[in-house]
Length: 240
Image (cartoon, rainbow, N blue to C red; front, side, top):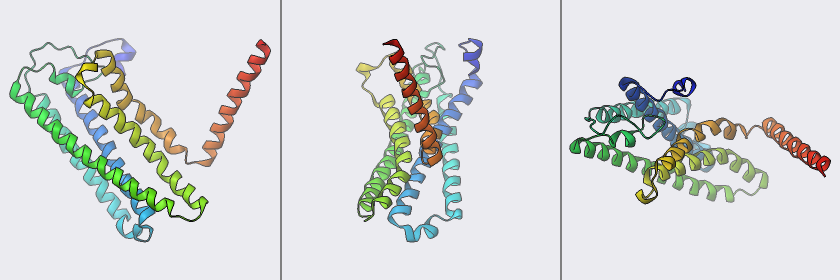
């Protein structure tokens, strides 16, 4: 934000390391908390009678604390390993922030590069495990919801899961495509656009997506959209 406002394109070495750490920390925390939220919805819908036992306030606090602590150590390890590598390919990053893959492109240490790739591989396996857990949970959730006899009950259950499912889909799909896309379609402009998609768009849309469960907000949004369409139609009528 500072660079954008002041029109500069440079960042200090310490600033780049701090930016990398906080980026890894917050994006990993979001994914961890999304996984915990998925478990919360699974218990609430599939095991409602055990919800108070399995997900009491103490259990939620422990899961959140474990997520924050493990992600802190994970981000610290990634950042320390990345910035311990010697850089011999210049100091220009083809990105709008300090991203680990872009920093690795500047490294000339083969062993350090392989160790960081190993860490990224372990991270990918952990992320894939969380993704499989979320898919399995939602399969069980949908099966339980479809067994609910009343249409109102099914609608309420789906409305509880839909915001979380939208955020997970947006976050995971853009992140996976950014890091696992074929090298043949890689380009600086595409990498930049994809980084914006998974690092900026999901956090920006999160408040709106989760707030759509609020009936008053939905009514206000519906009135706004209806008013915009009505105004556009009146303008077209005057034009005709």
